[in-house]
Image 1 (cartoon, rainbow, N blue to C red):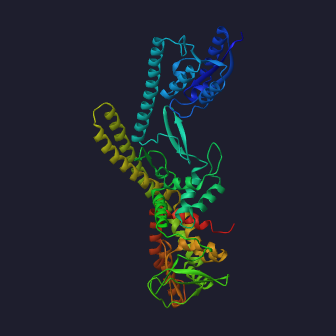
Image 2: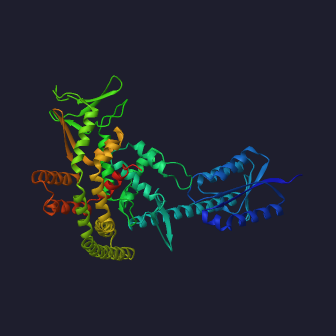
Length: 534
């Protein structure tokens, strides 16, 4: 007679065991030696490397199918009970194979199970299956408890999302921004917050910039981009088990930018959508000065674009206007931002002169904020120890930790503003002044559809009435436009450019306040800089 055909099955319960290289080789060596001694012929080896609760053991499923398809296989060799079973379903599956004539050899336990095994032997084996199941359940429960504890301490307890990396420092595991991908995540939020791009457009832009999954290198789908833009983890909070926690990780964006993105989503979800044959340069930017209805575009003769009032409130007497005329008057409105060379030089000098005072102010503020933040962290650490020791009830711990982490979050956001202002206060101010002064030139250099982007940054509400366009500037262009208009009027009246300090000093103070307090200042400067031709 020939040797009995057998298969081997080996399993480890973590990637670490596989990488260390001792568990699988040790199992295979034991099983092969046993097969040699028992006169069994090993025809296949099946190996699984995974966590104890991870679904879908591929090799186990392949082994079951192989044994079912090959009646000649009469023996299954495995190290011990907990290497073979992960749950009761596995036990039932193997028991079915035994009823078909398979013998299961539990080598380390010295047991051979088959349909002819004694009832006492099956009973003892059943107990071992229960113990193995209890071990898996207990391991899973302890893992969940550990992850919950991490979340309550503000540490994100799972795999880092796109833009972050999992980092191990000693026995502490946390997430930190991915130096390669986090700048792209920031760009993604900024692009969408501008209101100039659809979700599909920002997906294409960020994929073109190199955003991709770390392991596969695959591009990111639009649905994933939407999830990223809705995920609070990027400004410092995170959701775990349907609850929002204040994280201790470094944010990639500000809370202000995140809120701006959510506002864009809400605005767009509230709109009626319909198919459009053309993309209009100025639709949605201008309303009728007579009745307040929107001015909408219409194509005539396949090549001429006109804008007219929708007339939703009744017949309106406002006449059609050509797109070219609207474009001309928008460009004319931007001219008011164009500064005289001596004015631009004076404002730059004033910004540089104030740099030392500003740095001293921000440095002092940063030191105080860091001290307050550390004091709260010491309180949280002590509170957590008291909770573990049973000195503080769970409800008290949750209430106090939530409040103190909220205070930490407020401090962190304020600290972020001071640090950013301390780093880029003067450069940012100079960049914005130069871009604003050159806004008309930049506008004239852009194609018609691209002009809309610049107008979105400069204007908020625009109306058309009786052939004239009236615009409202956004901050900080509003104070710049008003001051420059007053200066030019005075210059035309007096015939000189005297009084720079008298006229421009109030603007300088307001402009400096905007740079210090508005989280959108840097985003605005970067967005305008993208319009500058290479």
